Image (cartoon, protein in one colour):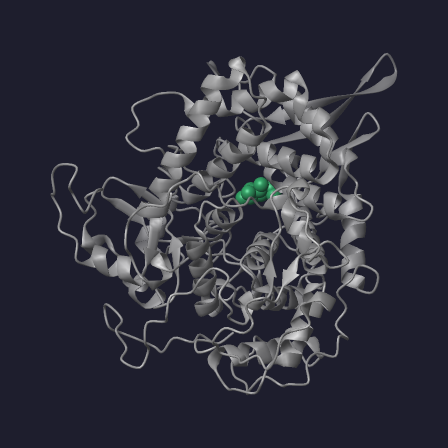
Length: 619
Ligand code: GLC
């Protein structure tokens, strides 16, 4: 997708021709927002006769408002109730648009082009106006018609790991051509998209998810020792495998877990516990099996995870202090401190735990702590991690060495630490949560997981969520490129790479975690797109994936600035690349599936009273 931003070599961009866009309401009637998915946190809270046949609430109630700021004019009220799948919605939207050349229109044209089977394999860079004749619908999107989807389901099924005859997870990768290392294990974070795919399947395969939750809970209960050091009780494993051995001439099985002690670099799986709590909530939302959450062991498991994160200490921030390599980026990449991925997962898990922990005297103190933390953390992240054009300009003009609580530059960040690339990267419309905030340090890099999870857990306000999507759209070439999606941006190079990564040969520039492109992230983007009402963006990302992923053998990641090359050391048949694709497809087929991985805004959280920019303060 061609960038809509003109090239700009000024330090702070102020292009006369590019006016600051009007503030957008989260559900203001831009083309994307014309389709609003009101998917409640909990289905039982939603009783509404506006539902389409598949349970998706789709409204067209804002269609009469002015379209001044739109790239596309909509000629009439859209007959959205008939359009229940994303393809249907895209089709209805495109049928109704009038011809009006604009940057976004060229993007839509490329979607249209692709959907009509005219793809050339290249990311479209130029084009004309949106055609008014819509989409032929010949692009397969359902599991029945699409061989890629069928292959994915088949491969997902083959990745199941069985323990005593029951499926308990999925193997990380099944690449016969590469050394297994620990890719033959079930990783907690990797299983998450597999679990979602199983829950979204028709009919759902919920047993594997339940078994996984219970087996990992059991592993949490084991004594965890690394050398002479015992890990906290609540620590969840990074991964586990089924070990077979012979006893009395019979093959016996046991589960062997890795809590970080065997992993390359001895990395801490701080995200595992959060993914586990979030998955538990998704499972319950999908199955209504409340008995699982009510089990004393499960309640205890949740508490143990949170005890690790809610204990009093020396902190002056509500954010969680982490070692490097504590999450999906499980190698040294300069994310030590307070990485956005962990903060967003922490926030999401806190909100799930608040809903799942039983109320009563036993839990009162913990629940109070959770509520306090949710408030403090949301204020902290929404205020200090948020970066848009205006805030960047503020930081650029920061004074340093301010003393006392009246300091504007609270973390004493030197404007000289703002990297050059950022001034060009930051669009006038849009914003994002930066990678890390700590004393004298803002890591301005973009990290996709933290931003998408912040949208899904409603850590991002609706305005921020919308602005994040604006940024992705404005920086499509950089963040999506030829193969979705960049895990981080930009890449560290040269001296910076050597110092920050410790000369890591796997994390060279534009490779792996260092600016590599990970197909698994497609499900997160799709979910964020649906939540913010931007189905066309998701559709376009899925189209890119469909051009190559299966033919390339479902690699773990891609390398290069635009993600053109299969990753140097990427495994093939990586399960979460497969599952991520299936989850994206399932959500597009039925946007109500978003419900499994999305939380409504917590209305009790007050918004920080800071005036920033258009993308921040709109309502
Ligand atoms: C890599 C990834 C990690 C993932 C593991 C298994 O180490 O960095 O996030 O869990 O592979 O796929």
